[in-house]
Image (cartoon, rainbow, N blue to C red; front, side):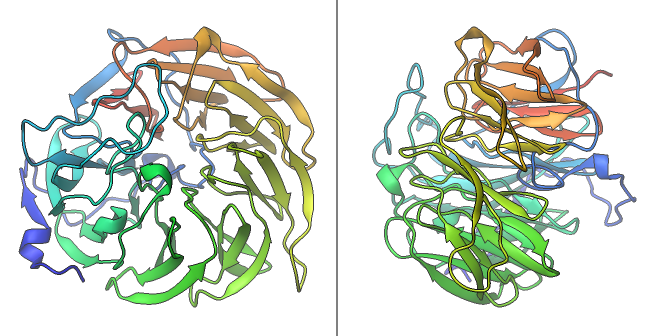
Length: 440
């Protein structure tokens, strides 16, 4: 547990609505419960709007205090997002570099309030805010693209689980009450002070968190009911930001992690290593996906590659079915839909692979308007949605043929966080605002 009283680590404030303790049954389309959506592959179960502008189809737009680049999650009528707010009102968050410059931390961090916000997803009104912790971070984040709140929350429909990395993991109920907190007991030292941002994943009653950094990397699991640590294993890995995949292979639930040196699968109940295979390469960032019985991992830094791994061997590294050194996304996670694996580079080059064979249906097609992006695309209603740093969202038809159908723009917005979709509404988080796009 964290070394300060619970009433200080979870101050509940600004209760604008009274929450019912009963949640009416919801359809799958009403939920975006984790990073990359209900099935973890960036695919929405329903549709999303196809046309909007500053003056059209904006249901609501709110300013978000502080700085966070985590994707919001949605459960029923509630939307949850994290942010970090300087406690000194004069301490403005650092501005992104023009043109998306490279670089590490921005200097001496200021004291931050690490927060979880709950909004009414239909109106944008604040239901409640919970302060998980107030602390001064030990290092910064990427000055153009990072934040102290970069990891998306995850929910099991009863609690919202939030990771602020070094600053701890927290579980809140749907009324904003702290259920438990957990201190990982380490100050993560990320490569070039690029910042922490690896989201936790749920595997039944277990919450799994990977903590790869420049010192002694590890992964650990917590009991979702109590926050008690169940296991911790060391990992021979440098800094990674790739969210793991929870899946069942050969009748056994597994947590599959990407790494520079190895792709590894763990038993979520015990932390036992189930299998391992070749790694994705340095700066593993895109999330892990699965097609049929193969595992897809990717990196887009030096020696970029996509690997389709087929677990099943009893001993040694697992075989690689196919690989590509072209079309590799660096920051953006891929989308898997209808047997097609979509990737996009930071410079806006989109590719589409056959997930079974690795055949490229199209390769590194340039998005319009000289787009640069960090946000991960999603799929909804037969379209890919690709947000950019210029406030654009390009709509590309799903399928083996490259065709851009539309480009929608919101002025003065920079999209780093990825979109979410729930019951036909599209939620776009910029560096300054959260916007709900809806046809009605």
